[in-house]
Image (cartoon, rainbow, N blue to C red):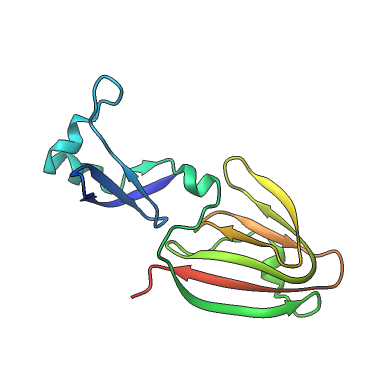
Length: 153
């Protein structure tokens, strides 16, 4: 679940919710398919700021468009990777991670909905949504970097 941080209108005048994960979702009142009369009222929209909604783009670990690279950590290998990355942890709110495997292979577990476990080989990468628990598992020689992406300035 992600929280609504604000609302804006798109080019067609439809209301869009901005989410803490840096994605956005249309919030249309389109009866009988979708009934959201509150979206047409400024007070109704204000009352929804901070509300939690599901974000299917985060569930699929899709990076939002327009992010800025904030910093890169590494490269690390099997001997220099910080121990904290090999335990369950998460990125800060509003910060996306991207794990990039430069050589070798790395196991990766992401506790999204649904959770997934995969093995990334050299040249592969995996986006990591903010606040989602994940961990890296190393079984042999590997080189990898972690990138941190956000809204920037």
